[in-house]
Length: 327
Image (tube, rainbow, N blue to C red; front, side):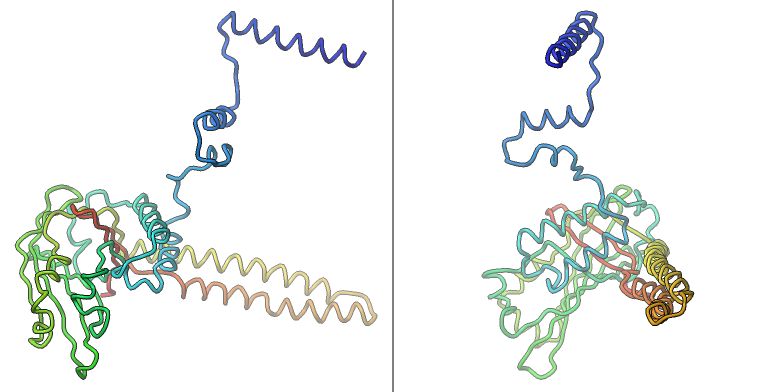
């Protein structure tokens, strides 16, 4: 009887579906299920169809503050990427930079040049000095790279890039390559850069690079055009960092509040060694609770990247990530 009933139900359902098709009534299916079936049919890369279907790579993994924190972690120990980055790590860094660009609120930064005026420090660049180039420039043995900075002068429409060097074995010899160029806005986010002038000082440093000076200049030549694809003000960066720190502190404070409640509950226990012991232990946790909230907030604030950041992409395919030097 059970088998006959099941067969009848299946037959009725099939008849209903056939009737819908004849009458051109759409059969409603789950969009997720449809998406999964399409990927299962077309994908040959071995991924689990459901996992690929539900993934959305264009969706940012967090706000600007969270992405900046992830970038700082990923960039640790990479020396701005100048001597190369493992391919997997480079892909991760560029993905995070792309996510940061999705949060750009200044779509036409060149219409208000005061937003980019001042001093900036390079955090990461896809420009690399590797292999023979690094050997020729002496950057494997005795010449060390220092800070990479950029000064934007909006009054004169000039950008000054400065790369610092130090030389081991020659006392305290330090110097810098300075590249000065003019820029001209050509759209809301693009500037043309031309008329490069260079200076390498002191003379001892110039002598060290003399044979390969043109190679050095070709690596850091900024001429061409540059698109500003992400820009934030110091106020935006500080507000995002404060909000993130407040969230961290609130989470820790909530844990502290739970500990306080546990302490009060334990302290109100009836007489007896077990109850007294529970009250003392939980009371200790209660005492730590508010402190944990304060410490959590302080730690979140201390770890927060509060400086303003900027991303640029040039016509050579290079990507630049910079942070504003505090004024």
